[in-house]
Amino acid sequence: MFYWFLKRILAGPILRILFRPWVRGLDNLPAEGPAIIAGNHNHFMDSIFVPLLAPRPVVYLAKKDYFTGRGIKGAVTRWFFKLNNQLPMDRGGGSGSQASLESGLKVLREGNSLGIYPEGTRSPDGKLYRGRTGIARLVLESGAPVVPVAIIGTDKLQPAGRLVPKLGRVGVVFGTPMDFSKYAGLPVDRFMLRSVTDEIMYEIMRLSGQEYVDTYASTVKTKLLTSAKPKKSESDKDAATGASKDGDAATGNGEAKTQGSSGRGAPESDSDEPSPSA
Figure 1 (cartoon, helix red, strand yellow):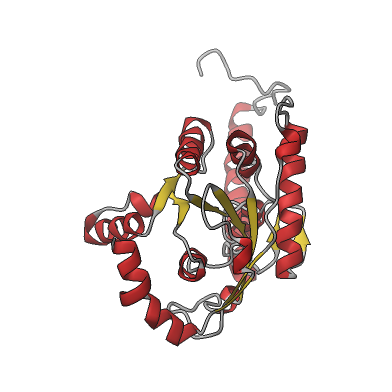
Figure 2 (tube, one colour):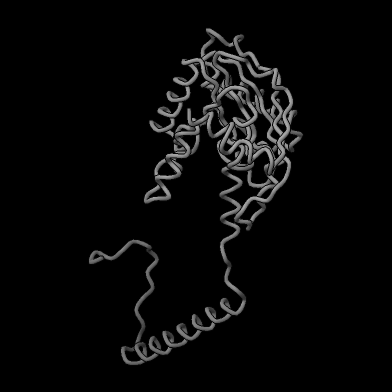
């Protein structure tokens, strides 16, 4: 009830006025029965525009962080995502990911449409990245058709450093449903999972016109975060080098005095092993 109220009366009309969204290929979305809506992912509002323009409800798997926040803000966020047909998804692997897979399968078994982003996370630069094989598991276990979706323009809404999204037209293109029944009854292995996933990613790329990068988006994000860490300035390096030299000089003087008083210095050890008293 709240989903339709939000879409048609509360938020939907406002979003249509502000962003003037356009849509193509609505006839490619099955009117009933299970369907997997697989799209590219550039902005958190992707999960708003697809359900807004789709003629039937779309249940999305959203990262679990949206459902575990604390305080008033966390409670409001959790409430909003639950009422918008979004389910928590664990991207950490193991039992958490298996539980997310089961949640998605339950949605499909009930005859609903499930939205998922095969890349696993938002694109850091507007390019399309390698898909995770979780979507292939959903496809092969459910037998549901896959509707590839291209969400266009959301990557321009909120450039880096901007807190509030800016206004701009957004488009959604629903592609021809993909049938993977040819794999039914065959033993599932990693090669089959990769083949199904890549086939889906190719269709998304064809619809969106994005440049494809055969690397996981999460890997690129990690590299970007690492390279963004502040580096020591030349003055800091010089100061550290000077301090090191002063320390070495002081140590050298102390060693010279010790050698002078004892007649010889302590012999150097060739071993890296600790002494018995360590």
